[in-house]
Image 1 (tube, rainbow, N blue to C red):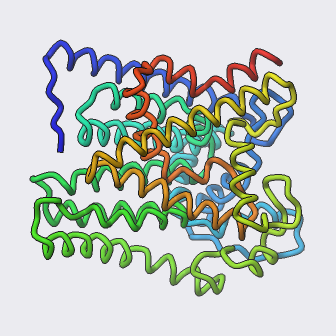
Image 2: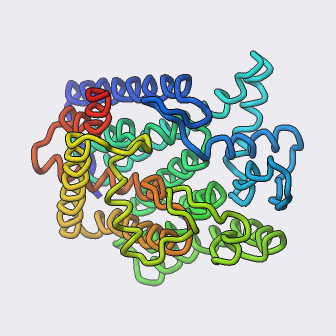
Length: 408
């Protein structure tokens, strides 16, 4: 485990840079919080088509105080219940804040719920940056991670609106950070238990958080005897599994499946439409899911790129960050056992993404939310080796948005 060694002036400069990044990231999110329309519109910031459903979930918790259950009916409002099959943690956190905001000013409940997402995004960025410092000890990597977490278009958008992806990003960053601390000399049983709590929280935020569970392997300290390493891994997994069992029991009792919508008949029963424009539900083959993501990953606000300049920027964006991510993975393969955890996090979430794209009805970049803290480490480590400054990284992250604004 590397320890950061910096002079006091260097430490002050790093602190100032990180603070400035957090301020900029917060301002971006607050701006989107108040300007993105609730319902999709033909604007530069068109809104997110599922946000009204997530807000309806929040409002239902606000008014009833209970965990709602999706019950298909013939009522026109039936479609607003589609997110009731989601894990409830985000909605129970957002409900009191939304209620308080509405009490302050009628109609501000939306902004109260969105504020929860903003806080989740900022916390995720801070813990991801702390993870980078603990593991690499390199200020450049730390600044790069914070830049990615705070300025990458999808990360900004989905931590500015009402969606449980914001809490999933936050709990994933907490779990990865806690696993990094598990490998330090001062870590003990309490840290391992807390790591299990964070892994379970990711599932209570969204069921796809389950893809992070294999990371429990890294709870064992490298210098410990094999028996101690296995006990550490077992403690993390047992705590996490015990805490998610009530959620699974609820889903089985009300939907007949541990993961609602994870089997095609339930998809056809509850959500036959496609959120990505592919009618009829699923993309039938994993290759189609990957191809669709590659084509849409650089569309940060879910608009279709029309001009040649927009299409060229989209392609260049995907190729650049894809290459940087692969280069970062190669670097961290030689940095074992520190770097392997980040690679495995991305691989596990990618497998879950491909599975979802094959059997479900959504293929969007946001489905990589549990892996984004790890992706940020991979890209930042590679960018630091390539001597790409955090300022240039910031410009590259938002380049598609800048081009979209310029051509409209």
